[in-house]
Image 1: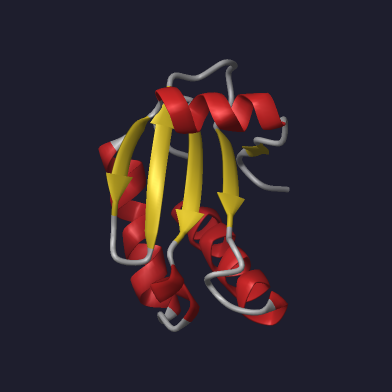
Image 2 (image 1 turned 60 degrees about the horizontal axis):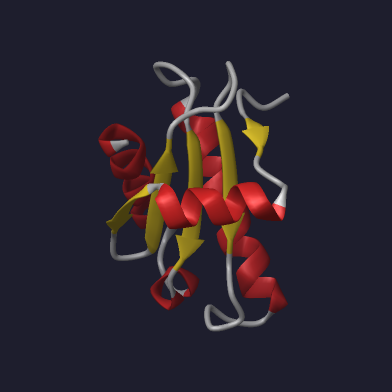
Length: 106
């Protein structure tokens, strides 16, 4: 079981993207908004610009794997991770470093 809950509703994802603080990294962009509950909630989006379905799913798994590797953070947050085209060719270590920097900055 993951230490966070998924952010699924379209309206909530749009709110985080519109009202959240944005940060840009080489492999992804991150948007963080104030929490709406007691647990952390995350969403990962990967567009077709990143690559075909195999590449998109690999990038999605790598971002979620980086979140799992970091473990529970201090306090709840709502975050949206948007993968950039460079993430399709990036190593797991580069993606994990960008996820860690985004969580530290939130």
